[in-house]
Image (cartoon, rainbow, N blue to C red; front, side, top):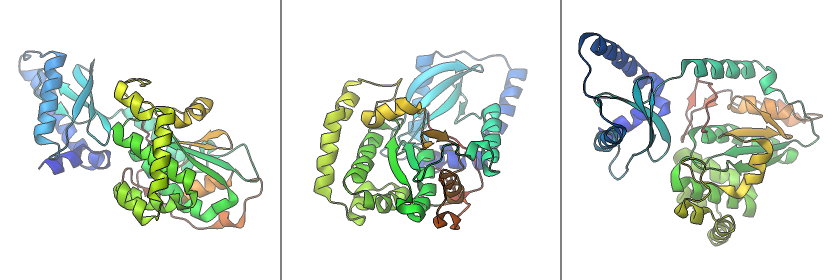
Length: 334
């Protein structure tokens, strides 16, 4: 039951399963407001405790725990930032503490992002690269547990295999982490694999993006564990990542900092995961392999023969696993 309900909270299943339920709940609220007198309003502290207990008792799997991070008021409800281990989600609770809403949809924002995605798919301005180069410089900023960061990583892997040394690619990291200490640790792992054994990064990511199992993927990719651990320790110490996390120093709001690529974050004004920079220009592209190949190839002065390769036009699903989706809304963690 808990596993089922946790899946209900995920973005992947939200539109298909949860949205109809929310619509029914909204209708029920209208009926309640119309036909009964208001119940007693509970305060924010009581609301947070009630929501947290409900989620942990009925929605989370055994051994995992959700935490209510922040509570504000919006639309006559309590709006909560809830850490559910793999992500931070916005949820709502009625002020009498009786009705819990897993998530709300901002219709204007969805219309805007869908229009942008459609523009990119049609080869519009958003997918064009105005700055050309003989060897394009491609920088991809992600959070390693952001479902939309993993989505674009899955889309770009076949492009990297196709173009190889024709481009100068570097995986970089947003300078804060929204997905707990595990994200700081995984950022360090991917950073150090790229630094020590860059030729093995694609193999590691192909494994990791399937199920998120870092330890077994390090072994499967044939990465030198001792050298990796040494790099992680030195980088962690240099940028005080764990130290600042433990001491709550350098946080951006509720989120701990990750300063390894901080200078580049500031240079490009990176505001979330994923952010794609090509030849110093932020580019919005669909996240399927075909679109990413087309976009990156637009950055060449003279595109190589590899740009004629046929790659999949199917968009990877957000999160782990190599399923595909017809939804091209360009969401991000920010």
